[in-house]
Amino acid sequence: MPYISSKQILTYARDHKIAHGAFNVNALCQAKAIIEACEELRCAAIIQVAEPGLAYIGGRADFLNGTMEEKKLGAKRIAKYVKALAEKSPIPICLHLDHGRSFESCKAVIDAGFNSVMIDGSALPYEENVKLTAKVVKYAHKRGVQVEGELGVLAGVEDHVFAASSTYTNPMTAIDFFKRTGVDSLAISYGTKHGAVKGDNVKLRKEIVIATMENMLHENIDGAIVSHGSSLVPQYIVNEINALGGQVKGHGIPLEQLKEVIPAGVSKINMDTDIRLATTRNLLEYYEADKSRQEGSKVYKLLKEKPDSFEYRYYLKEYINELETNKGFNDELKAIVPLMEKAVKEIVLTASVEFGSVGDAPYIK
View 1: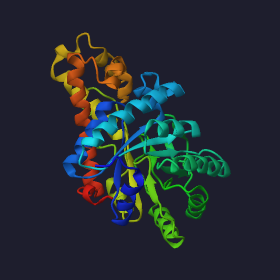
View 2: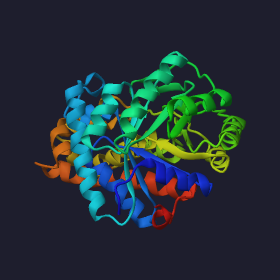
View 3: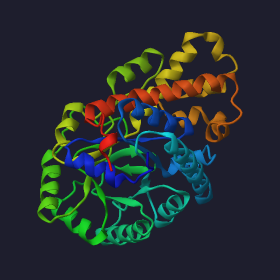
């Protein structure tokens, strides 16, 4: 099936009042798992990598301080790998940059072979956001690549994305932004929050989604609405981690609230935190099931150093080169990789069923 941009996938989702999960990866095996899960359900696959993830895939364990060269290497590695898988897959597959912070970052991944990018200028003054986003759109559209922008600031922490409080998106400003930048999709702030700790009383402002989409229809704007900070943070996974000695805290976006905004116009829902949680749970189970596996394991040592963390990139850093080249696996890593893939599939399968995208692959042009 075609290696396609996000526009075809999101247009179908919007028109049929469903949504697609978009799943963040930091290792090649995770991209493979997303595709395999979506093949099982015959739905399109949207694979995402954020800038720190690019650095990690490029071999930088200290991913928050990755250089542009390391990000370029990561972009080339993941694009080559996903393209090869797409050639053999029966479903449409999209590779998307999540939270691109600069024109240079977006250009780098486009040149590497990504077919969808997000430029996040939401922290900039409005006019600067418009100018930056329009510049990315101009470069991307000439090369058949689609662009996602962002308006409003989400609270919370996710990689290098941080805000102490949220600024809701003004639906009228969203229309102006679509018109002046030419973006294909727009991430809006309507009550979601980055990270695992979203609070006990999350309330999504569905009316912002409805007003934005109604205005888009009135102005004949052919675009899609995206929901960031939308991880569910399944409490059963949190409880399982803590039963194994973890000290993880967090509450996600209530599933019933997410499902209410989908027919209102949300076509893409980003998922990252849930994959990190499921990966941490799976590895804790692996090492606790046989105590002999703990002896001499650097992964286990790092995993137990921070019981309140579920950042698998930290405790898998000893194997970063093997994970990002698919070479040189020892016995421990041969056991770990299937657990990573299983964690991804658990989240992808659940989200695809809940968001309504099952079986859409044959209908996406």
